[in-house]
Length: 442
Image 1 (spheres, rainbow, N blue to C red):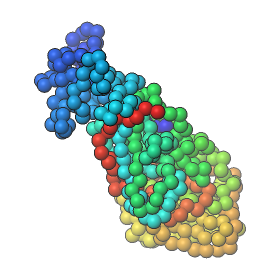
Image 2 (image 1 turned 180 degrees about the horizontal axis):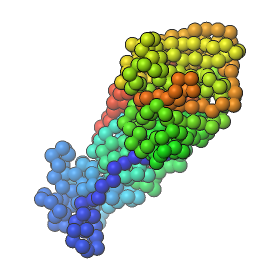
Image 3 (image 1 turned 90 degrees about the horizontal axis):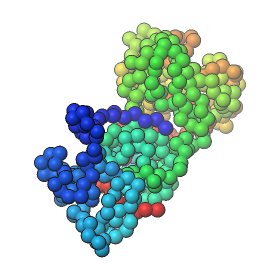
Image 4 (image 1 turned 60 degrees about the vertical axis):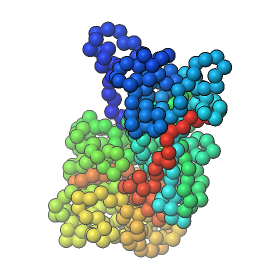
């Protein structure tokens, strides 16, 4: 699990520090008069809330440090603490509360809607790992490290997820989708606010077994080399940086952060899949920042063969993206035209090879650019080390690389197209479908 978040001191911590005295919790309350941090404070369900016109109809929002409810809009009427009341009781983290339906609630559920027609048209992608990148003020109620958070389908079944980043009002995560009906919206939800309810799940289960490696290329760098780039699959095929990479080469890229290469850098992967790949899908987000006088390498030797499979952008006298694979001792070739990948722009480049048909294909942004067919057979293999950002024959890449993936099968074109749209424009696929509501206890 990867988490990036921006921590900040709470107002309570700042007040306590300035006062030079032990910190008391000013956000738990029994009556309105205790909520005096700012004007208009009111005690709601045991926590102090303050005016916020965006919260309707209550016009109140719980302070961000109220356990279990911090930062969420107050949606229900003030509750009574009188004996016999069926209203909500203290809903601090780990406690049960009663919703306005009288059903016991544990934490909250933020509903999401997935537009499956945008994602994959009329094609069902079984077990697809979807990027979910959404914002909502309700997410301020989740723990800052996401430890009280998980994803569910429309009947509450837990969906494996890998958390990439969480901030007070946004989250970015990879979630493995359940079976869905293509063309119809898919209802999901984010559960949070009650750590006692968090189910057991394996973040690596997000990635189908066909993926032999998934590298987000967003790990921190210390430099100059030897920094690890983690593999998110169960295989744990971590990469290692070489060259003179520095911390400032972790930069904004396609999905969160990626790596900036400056011509003498590489990431090498001592992978267990070397020598065993027959068919393959290899994909990477790439941006070329050279002046066009040299080739820009993306990757090489993915099957362990001394050169292939590899992809690069040719110098400007050609300009094409050229992908190659070795099969039966011969070189197979697929090329994407120069205009599919202008310099200075991030694009998703993919190479597929099918051992049963002998077909090699190149894709850019999920669209087929070129293919050619030869005699069937597995990829030529060897004991070489797969490498990113460098090809011995052409030198080093100058530009960005992000989200490098290797699968031991040919993924369908609809899968690659879904990667392109959901990772470049996640809001077109997933949106928050409504406010957070109390979630029934299991």
